[in-house]
Structures are given as structure tokens and as C-alpha cells.
Image (cartoon, rainbow, N blue to C red; front, top):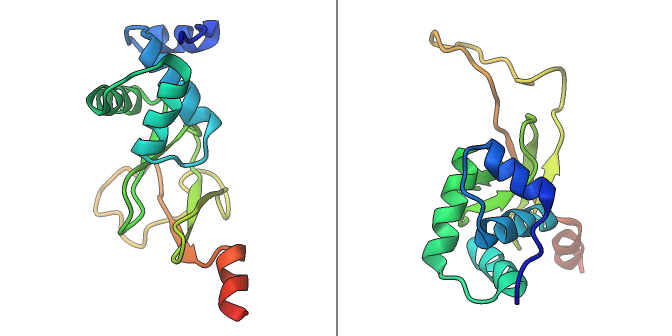
Length: 145
């Protein structure tokens, strides 16, 4: 199995100063095609695209792509890390307390950061992270049945 190298993905990796490898291309494309994927789902997606890849290689690539700003790592409390391809904007997340599904939520109001801290303690704030918690439609319907 070989991954067809996407010129735009390869160019993004090069532009971020990263070496272009089949595993990195497959990982970036898997994350972008997915929906807040965990490491196991990402590894499975990469394997579907290029064949065998170790978890260590997946973790290494996730770290490099996150550090380069090509993907975003989110860690809802009590959940394993998840990764998404939506970067370079100040969006938030809603998480189901029952099944753990995660969805994007655009900023509630205004420009980034969309919240103003009551006391910034001298920090120059560039981003606000909000996680809304509740029940997704499926879990909510199941709990009322």
C-alpha cells in the first residue's frame, strides 16, 4: 500500500520546516478527514493509507505536526487527547458527558479572543479556550426514553 503524495500536503510540511514522509502525509490527511480523532483511530487511518506504522511513529508525527501548527491537540478533561485539522482560528468545543463525542463551536462573540479575562495578570492574551459540556442529541434522547 502506498500513499499518493498530495502536492499541497507535502508543500505544507515543507513550508513548516518538516521532512516529507509518507507517514506524515497520511497522518495529516487522516486527521483532516476525521472528526476529533484519538491516537488509535489516527493510527488505523494511517495504516489504511500506507500499511504498517508503529504507534511511536504516530506519536512522533502528531507531536511534530502539532508543534508546527498544522494540527491541533485538544484534551477534554477525563478524555484521551484528540486531534483536529481545524487550526488558525479561535474555535471551541462541545463534549458529550456520556459518549465523549466532540464537536466544534465557533466563537460566541467578537474577535479572538472571544472572551475577555476579568484580570489578565499582565499577560498578553491571544486565545481563549472554552469547552462546553452536556449530552449529545443521541445520548439526550436515550436518557429520556
